[in-house]
Length: 91
Image 1 (tube, one colour):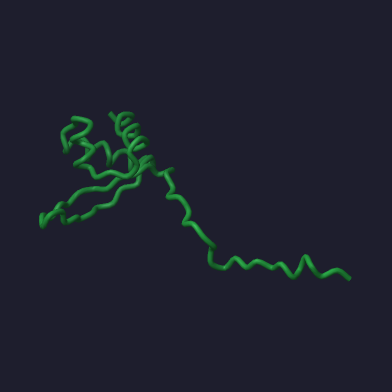
Image 2 (tube, one colour):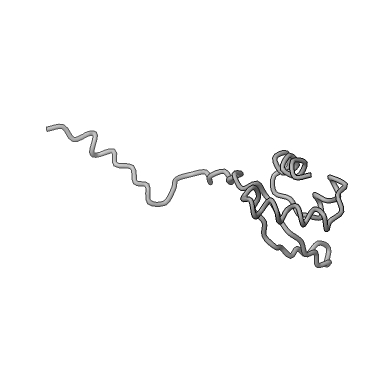
């Protein structure tokens, strides 16, 4: 079951536990137990979330692979200075 969960997260990135249970046809209680084991082993990162969809409060666990880092933001990074004058100075 854990291989199916990891494969699903590789294919679909970060997901809510309710969505994973529905897609993998696994009872939610069994999925949460397996996610707890995977998180203890360091394979996934989980956090409790509360979402409001159409006025309904939905509480669940959001999971993603532990090695799945978000892509860096585009554009210039803070603290990086371009020093063109250093190359142009010749003695």
